[in-house]
Every structure is written in structure tokens, then in C-alpha cells.
Length: 240
Ligand SMILES: [Zn+2]
Image (cartoon, rainbow, N blue to C red; front, side, top):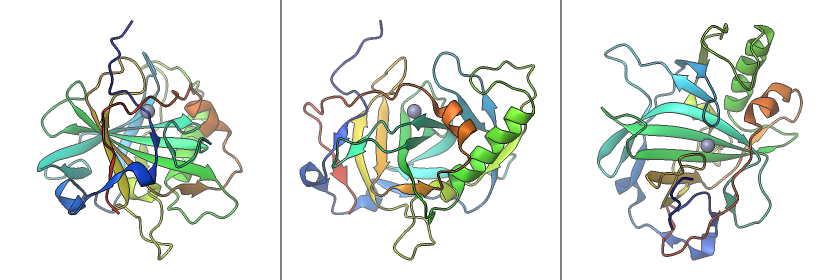
């Protein structure tokens, strides 16, 4: 059994109990470029499957954020069916996308930074089509004959392209990505080994996806969403 301490994730976030930061950009700045990045789906063992970004050829770099003066790079993306975090509610969102970052020059075995984006199925789709493109990739993979849940290195897995900014909720103009409205706390991985080495950022607003034609996405994302854990002595801060 993994050691579980007092800084577990996910949590229930309550806006009124979070502390507003005076200078949020001193804590986090999301500096992703508005461009496509190549990557591929990798195996699911021992936990959920991931879309892993290819190491960019120099001078290109991974999509990056600046966290407390250190550069963290987006290495993997995965999706949960039903959100793990909840905000001002006990009702889960339909999906939660996790952008898993490692510190530049380090691996995902080292302390991580994860950005969580809550997604809801909605008839109108003002979001940036990030999850739709992800769903297209999964459909291509299904056509290529790979099982969505488990596959090995001999399976034919199509190379994919994603633009991380397209996943973010839209700003008030309805078009540009809102990368500045977030909650932050210190927590853990939500799958084994549940290590308490994750700096979490959960976006304040939800992204939307049209509810049709999401079979592959649901199948890929199907895994137990972990229940909310107690905040204990931690503090949640917010940028807005
Ligand atoms: Zn996750």
C-alpha cells in the first residue's frame, strides 16, 4: 500500500475559503506558445493512459510555464471521466484534463506541476476545440485497431498533434484562452503512487465540449475518479 499523508488530491475547492493573491503572476505564468505540438499515446500501466509530448528538436522547447521562478515543461496529458476536483459544488464535472509538467532538466519522478481543467458537455461549444481534437486522435487510434484501454509498443499508434491552449476555458471575449484564472494548492498524484509532490493549479472556469460522438473519449477516460480528500492544514490560493 502506498503511504498516504495529509496532502492528498483531489480536493473540494471553495472560492470563499481561498485566499486571493496580490501578485499571482509571481507564482505562475502560463507561457505556452499558440502552436501544435507532436506526441503519442503511451501505455496505461500502472495507472491511466497518457498522451506524451515528443521531445522537441532544438531550438524548440516543450510548452512551458514559469512557477516560482522555475521553468516547468508540459510532458503529458491525460483525462478523467468525471472530474476529480470540484469547485463550489459537490457535483462533478463531466471530465477533468490534467496537464502534467516536470521541471526543466528533470523527470516526472521529480516534483511535478499539474494544471487541471474541468470540462462539461454542453450544446454550445465556446471552448477552443482542444478536447475535440483529442477525441479525433482517439478515433483514429480506434480505427488503427488498438484497444483504447491497454496497448503495447507493437500496436500501431498514430502520431498526434495538440495545441494545449485550445483546452483552456475561454476568456470573457469568448475567443482567447483564459490562462490567468486559477486556484493553487499543494497536493498529490491522484493515482498510484499518490506521492505528495504535486503543485496543483485548477482553472477557475469550465471548458465545454459538444456531447455527441465522444465514445472513444469516454472509453479512454474511463477510470475511477478519486474522491475529494480533506484540505487539513493546507491553504488554497486564487489568482482572481
Ligand atoms: Zn490525472
